[in-house]
Image 1 (cartoon, rainbow over the protein chains, first blue to last red):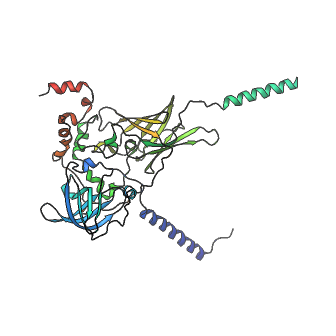
Image 2 (cartoon, one colour; image 1 turned 120 degrees about the vertical axis):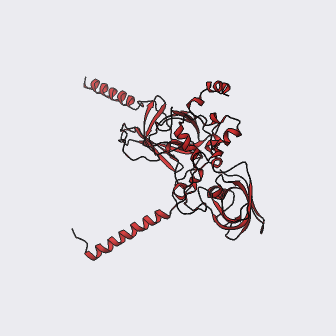
Image 3 (cartoon, rainbow over the protein chains, first blue to last red; image 1 turned 135 degrees about the vertical axis):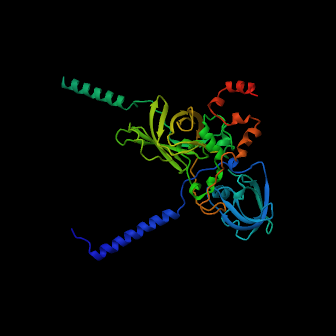
Length: 142
Length: 282
């Protein structure tokens, strides 16, 4: 049986390592098909409502839940980075929303249920409006 | 004479082959897509139960302390966002389940049953008589399951589970938990009865039933989980509530006009005669 030449063998090994690295890399970036669904009632004061108004920093359109991050003042007037939990990307897609529905810099008004841990500065989305163009969403999600 | 013998052998072979084609056991076919059917368990299965609701749980003081100190914000940290429910909680999730049989290729005997929960967790229930792994074998979210037929009912024994929660307000179950399930099919309805035993956090077996309905139109929609920074905290921050500081764990009792002691669960509170005991307490 013919043995591969040393140079060719080295080349093949390089290719193998390259392919292996690609596979590992891709598997790291591809979404992980696992999630645990947390309890809303355990995370938020669902019987309370809080309104915040500010500029959007980031819109994470994703599973298990989307997040809207914005900079807005707290009840003491101090600026905070807020995390507002929304429906999963899958749920929002069925309501006609997409990853481009909101953009960084958008000025928005959000109402939601405040988080039980005040240090989190988080809300569970009840409604969001963007006065600039009248974009509005209100509803519920699981 | 030879012709008579040939006819007799032929008849014997025909009768034998006919008898062999009859299934040896009246096993139930669980295969198919099963959608959730919510009844009194809707709140727990969909949005999630309320903080401090330990009613109906035979938990001990150690479990109560851990649950009172548990913080749901844990699910916001990167390491937790994409954790699956363990096999013992998955039936209570919002996810449908696809069940199919794995057949022995020659005999057609069912050697395993697979239960896939929206591609988030896939359990295998072995029916080929294999033993459970040794105690020191790794524990996983699915655990290790073997099953046996009891008439039409499939009884499943699961060991080697990871530590998890038994309710989404943080009531824990340890990695020494074992679970017996009884899978029952009545027409298009599937009922799963779970009997959960945990020597660390439960003083009695915890029993619950969950229902599904056969849905031939149901298809899994990919729901891939992406890890992102959800809340703004310093690196290494771990959500927690120190014992004695979590006063909102009594909100459930107040909201539903229950004595706090009753809402805090325990085996004693699970039985009807507990109501009589409550009446005589000051």
